[in-house]
Length: 104
Image (cartoon, rainbow, N blue to C red; front, side, top):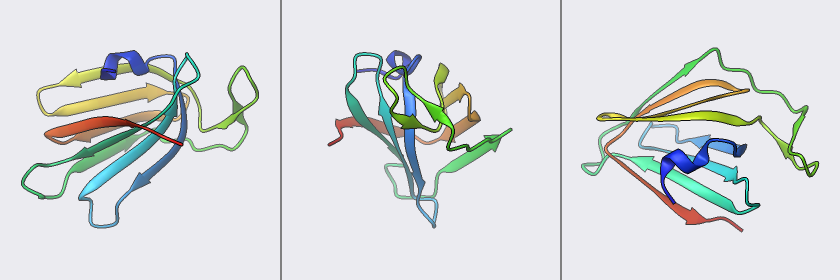
């Protein structure tokens, strides 16, 4: 899976580590697969995460009625990281490494 495939998925949870060493997103893809997206820096320096127009609501659901924080409507990959845009606002992540794994 690549980041661009996240457009149309739903954000189920987000965990931004206190010292800003990493961020984890759990998403539900359009195909129904739950995935975790991790981002960090290889040299373990803190990452930068910008929240623009952040809106967290408990009233969003997927088409199947699964509670979510909203739909990820677009994804942009840059030289310095990536950004997610959707019902929750903009989340800009500045990190040099990111990867996916299956979520339970």
